[in-house]
Length: 493
Image (cartoon, rainbow, N blue to C red; front, side, top):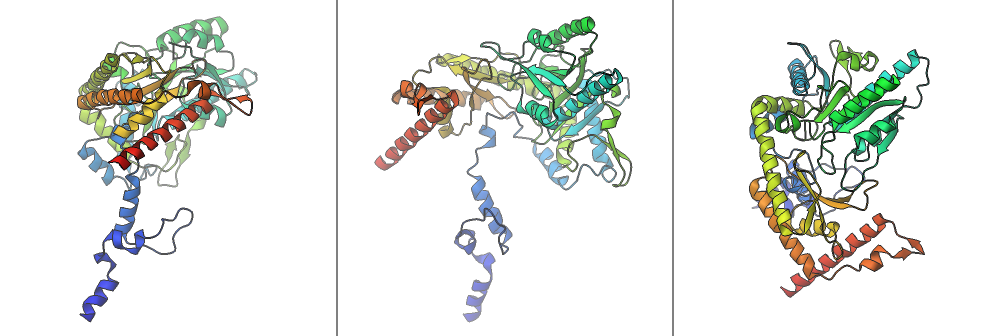
């Protein structure tokens, strides 16, 4: 009996994790703990906290892939300990990256001969890819200006106000002026005519978006190219185009093969695409490809030899995992052109199911187009009683994560909800989402209208509130109201 008791007190592995001392204190937040804890307890504690995160599959705000086949999951786990930068030690992984670059460049109609290697690189996402492309344009422009004996200290990029924040980061980090074409109601992408009007001798490139984050719409790269060709002829400049195809690069070739947006247009010099969006790979992989070797200045490429052999590199990051590169190659050879086309077709069909279901409610205006990235952006026809932020907040109670946001200048008075259709968003989920929208609308209809005049037109210390302050106050008000209603309901039960 004594021995049994001693073993029980000393062997912590026989105790329930939830009865152990490891869960009886708050977890460290600012300092590393003094002592170790069992691996089972560490796993359980962290796993329990992660349960409070949203369900990635129901996160309809994100374009990023949330499901892959088990075989690809296995490949990724088996290569998770490989550092991609060790190219000499992992030559096959490097070869797989080069194969991906070649396939993607040819998918985008790069002018390559049989067996000719494409120019490009894998990145951790489109943000890094855009940084690299922007640096290449800046250096090309500076070199030309220096050779001409002209000032080269005020470069700029022309793009639409709907660009992703990574373009703003590039401009600020690398001291390039960002000249944005403002949007307008019912036209939520860059106007090519206005963009070309803003081009001057200091413009290093015009950035077009193939798949706007706001509405999924493809910008008219063909018209932009034609207008810019004419301006270059008139001015003697050679302003090029970069296509940010983060979302649309793995959609357009399969759904809209006749659409000219890629290297078929002579002024398109580089293209980026996110492998972790419609490239169907988990987060952490992007690609940037250049039209020809001459479009990537040699001085931006570094050569290192302290890992075993001479290795050229052009990245902002050094060490990174190999798993996503391997997963991208898996998807390209597993699905092939046919498989990608089927996935994109299915995404588009499910988008149409959701679109028609929302239209059938009679409560929404559809803002997005039928062609483009498979998503639905929509706004309330009548937001006098309840607005889009309240709809999004109430929908969270059903598990769905649907973003609501205001448009950029000069359409900031327009608020929309947006649902992104990914590969793992099935027909059944689309129909269920429509049904849940109807429930949310019915529930909001039973609540008292928000005090619009007081909140929307109120002042603080005599100063009129900004739209953002008003929106935050409205959202906080409805959160509190819904929590109170839920509490009351639980009390009654």
